[in-house]
Length: 81
Image 1 (cartoon, rainbow, N blue to C red):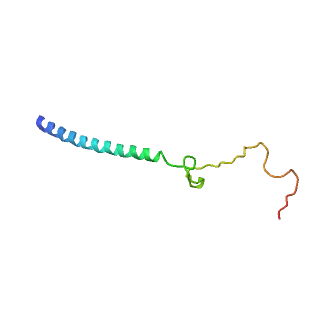
Image 2 (cartoon, rainbow, N blue to C red):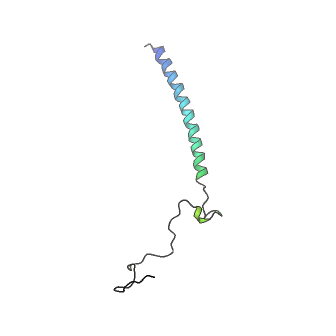
């Protein structure tokens, strides 16, 4: 392979890489726009949507955890209806 052939091969590879770079930069711009759009998702806390439409809601119980065991009094027989 002569020097001229190597130069032509490198120029072709360079052109391909430039095209790939332009495509990649365009895709990055699209994804950045998508992230900006989805980062402003409305929830019940920042809009008038009802709470049941929240996707990531957690248990919002107002009761705090206690050290006491659950259940009725010790040695009392339980009754049900």
